[in-house]
Amino acid sequence: MTRAGAPLVGLLVLVAGCAVEGDFLGTPFAPVNTMLAVVDRHELVEVNGALVPSLRPAPAHTLSLVLTAARENPGAEWRREPAEALTELRTDLATRDGVYLHLVPVQPLLDDGSYTVWFDRDEANDRHGLVQGYTPPPPLGESVPLGGAIRLTLTVDDMDPQAGGHLDGNLDIESRHADDQFGHRAVGIVSIPLAIPVVAERVGKANLAVALPILACAAAAGTDRGAGCADEDPWPVPDVADPAHGR
Amino acid sequence: MTVLRLSSIALAALATLAGCQHGCTGFGGDIDGVPFDPNGTVFTYIDATDDRDDPAEPARVAVAMTWIVFNPAGDLAELSGAELSEMRHEMALRDGLALVFADQAAVVPGARFVSRLDGGVETSDEGLHAVVHFAPERLTPQSTYASFRQFGSVRTVEVELDTVELTPPAPAGAGEGAGLSGRVVIDIEAGPDDVDDARTGQLEGTFTAPVVHERPAEHNLGLLGAADVIGLPLAPPTDEP
Image (cartoon, rainbow over all chains, first blue to last red; front, side):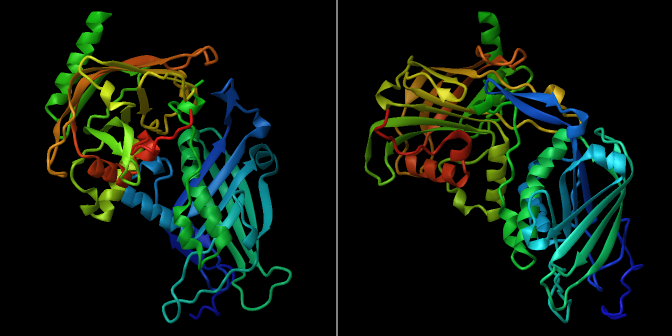
């Protein structure tokens, strides 16, 4: 079967027990080795310089979703992995297939059952983006860039947003030519079923602090330059012993 | 109270003496359940030259305490990149303490020093600057925001020196000299603006910190990225108040 002859829809790729449906004109996209879902329900409010946790009202709860071909336990604290394992994780986040949605309002998602966002690939930011993993050059492989316009559609069938809850649904990823874009592009729709636990909030947000800067950098940099994003500094994680906020 | 202090110091010292390789320390007590354990490597060096190798006046005396174990008089650059990377990584994730005495002339047996920080800002000027690095809280699926209670903002470090012998062995790199020994009390208290349930407590310990030459000490601390953790090696002194 040639890549050009691969069906647009219906190709079933089984990766780590997760069925990915579809590809981008024969280019597989399978960010399914690790799926991290975190619901942000608390904020740290500064009172006289001290950080005090506060439960946000339900309409302000947000979901963050990271899907990546990097392999890691979403419930473990990533920054405490041994240095070698952490370096490997950071490199894989920067260079392998990945997609993320950050700060998606939970209540509309529960009410409407879906959330959709369109964005230009080169304008990815820390709210949404897509990392196309590196593919070796021919004859080992063929690296066809995705289209310049990406649509992410998150459909929720069932969700318990509490820590230890679950998210069941689907993430559809559509790659299209951007308006001013011509030439060969890997376009199509990849559909990834989701049946994942909602990770405990504090450890989940600490893991997002590792992953999102790398993913956002790699998504904006593109496949050829994404590897350099493995060194992106993590976002700070507020700590109880932080002397700068200890008053 | 005095009995409690002595017993906790003695217990900490007994618990740690067996494992000492390069210096030694042991702390008893905790900060509302958070212990403190920088007992991997403890050493002293004299910061006698600036970054251009010119004499620094007055010479400062620095004591470093780290959870990780290494030979401060050796050369960490001889480790493999993976080993050094692992040590740097652990350095940031573990407890550490730096004691910096502003003037070597004041570092004598029986001398007492106090360093006080209020909200991260040093408010004392008594010849000691202390940096206490608590390991970042270990997060698990059981970690909740209900347990997010910050430490009190007033941090006092008291040091009393027992023995002082600051002559490093010759030649440089020959190992460790006698150095300093003494007692340390770290007090975390709530300030007037702190939240009601701020974590407070007291840590009490003893230390024995052999002296090593300045250059290997600063070289190794630099390789470990210790400046971002405990503020060593020291930046050149400034004339600004």
